[in-house]
Length: 170
Image (tube, rainbow, N blue to C red; front, side, top):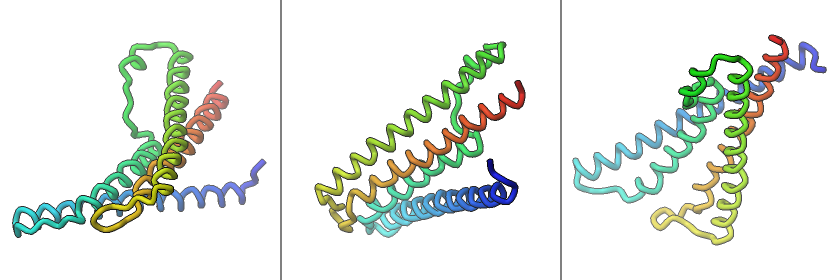
């Protein structure tokens, strides 16, 4: 059992992690949009395209999107299809639907983790690099297993919290 002091330390660590996740998401989005904007201005205003923009911009946007999904999970603001959920009137069936969606999300993110890692490893073994800047391609693929891991943890916490909450209610 966790005592009060350990619980406070754990809570503080989670808050720090959440802040780091927010910073990575925000930083990646600002840099990605900024680089893409600079590329558009260079191309259409100065008629001098910057070729590196096509290599750098999308990776930052991918990081912001995939890490941002973890932030959305944390705040329970992820995309939900509640057409069926709203038509159900029994709490047991609603609970089953919630758990089913959490387990489907967990399964998908574990799939991202495993196969994202395999894909990243394949790129690493092939020693591929981007044509303009020579950035190792495996570093682009790193976001997939990383985001799969953090989203899997989010789903595990959501499942734990759901069962903990229903135990207290029932």
